[in-house]
Image (tube, rainbow, N blue to C red; front, side, top):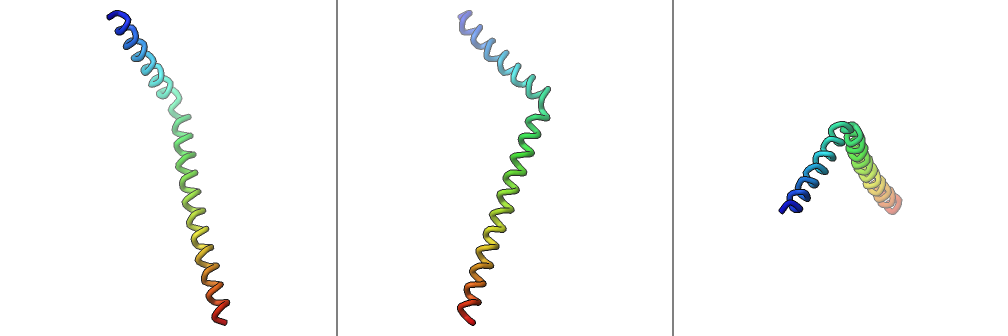
Length: 67
């Protein structure tokens, strides 16, 4: 039973160490999260411009056929 308790204690201390690290270095995680949000936003904007380019090309093709 002491072995089980020592394993539980070790896991608890490890989780506490992780939380302590995150508490003292929260700016690193905020920087990473902000970068990821910017990356997703950038992908969204590029996807919209690509869709717009496709529509413009399609309109140009239709106009070229009609004239």
